[in-house]
Length: 349
Image 1 (cartoon, rainbow, N blue to C red):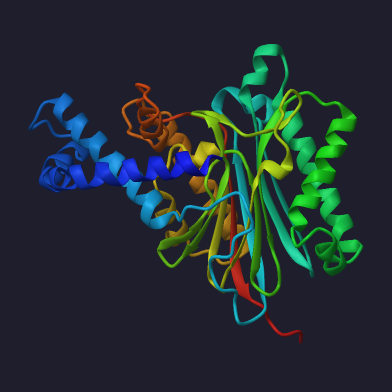
Image 2: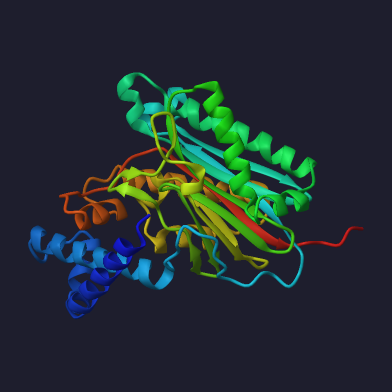
């Protein structure tokens, strides 16, 4: 992650908004017509206006709803004034062509009285070109992260937190990654982990272009920032990669009862704008595990529908345009979502 380049990108995005916002507002009726599939203007003109609106939406989301964060420990939101616990749900939907192998994504949900660990891992698909299924790598790394979390809690979380400089997820991921090196498994993946503690403190470690959002009510109040070497080339852990767990962004924030955490692989973020994934989360009435599994499934399905739409102006397409590429449509991919509902801890009966 390059903070200087990121700030430059944000400045350019804001300049674009200021230049185009009046036009976007003037074109509101035309865009509405386009969305409804009518043909009152030429397709090229409507496509241009839709693309401009999407650029503005992307930039506004990044500038207003997505605070810029650096790859260092950060504190953003206040912790809950009461003890919390969580309910979780998850769904992993492979790319249609990878159903038989299970796809390349993986997820983690592990909970003890000392905290709830959740995570998503996305195997890098390019390995298939040399005959390697990176799904094996992501699932094996997820398994070892789970084992390390169990050992972390068994040995006493508080003492280990102090030993690891207040960054328990970094220690857990480093030890799991060391196991992978010893096993000499080929492949690589991105990783996004979160650890919710009973006091409402949320630790996050993000390596690559998976990510996490904290949703409060109907708005995103906290977001990770993807880490890319270049467009569509994420920071990743694995064989033949020089990236390390310490290259990830380690963040600490606070959450409150009724907040929702959404962890997802890029198959979700590349295809759903903020208003779409927030809409799915807020429309879910399920407070228990089965309900949250359903929410995660609907997110994954929505992402794949968008990913298969060649005419859709997706976040991936807009980011590609900003990188100077002629990209259009969604990006069909494995789509994995983990949904965590923060709840007020109940007193033991």
